[in-house]
Image (cartoon, rainbow, N blue to C red; front, top):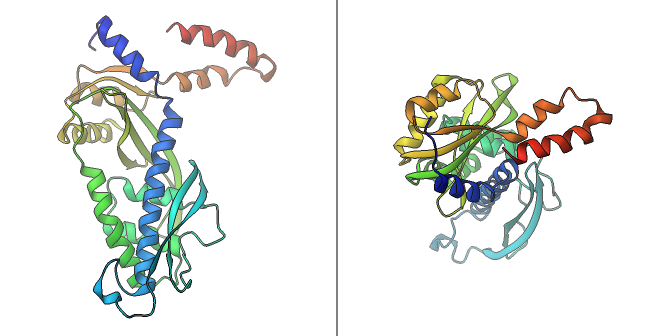
Length: 288
């Protein structure tokens, strides 16, 4: 492992202080979720009217787009405001999020899965059928897939910065239907803080287990997309992680996630003693 000089540590400390891992990952996933929901609603409107936005095929059809309304929906990642398209005749009935619906059930988990690496077009279509139900027409599913797939592919392969002072690695577990049964999978999100202190989800990778082979493939993809160096990788002692990191980014320092360390330290503490122990731990980690 490399040793950071005082200037680098000061820079990393400044950037890291702007990021609270779970909250920032949730905020960025929430934006991703909202944007995808809006794309799905646009595809629904196209199917409802029978033509795409700004197409001449819509001339003299008796109905057309009529701007947007705002709607706040509650997901696993918090509240998101989305734009819902309207038609002039007031006949459009959204299906992915109905007019009086405010909660999204497990839609956000399926959208997260669609952005994860390893998802084929068929997989995405299966997720959309689960969202819309068996009565959704093949034409509607195809229209939504065509709308979403390019932005998913672009997001997955976009170029990255050469240097990230701090990168956080975290996993979100969820249940997904696979064949005739429901299984648990984990979408590993990678959040980077760039030299300007801005945060971005660099990618999402799907896996049912952790291994050095899996993490090596993740690091190699980051490298192929332009990342040349990471100063600090922050994670929860993920299986196979450190060895794979050493292979691809040998100068990167490992930093175990303090939140997870605190949780591991307090799970054996009696409730009546927890407040006192937490105060002591705050002094310990505050000086780390």
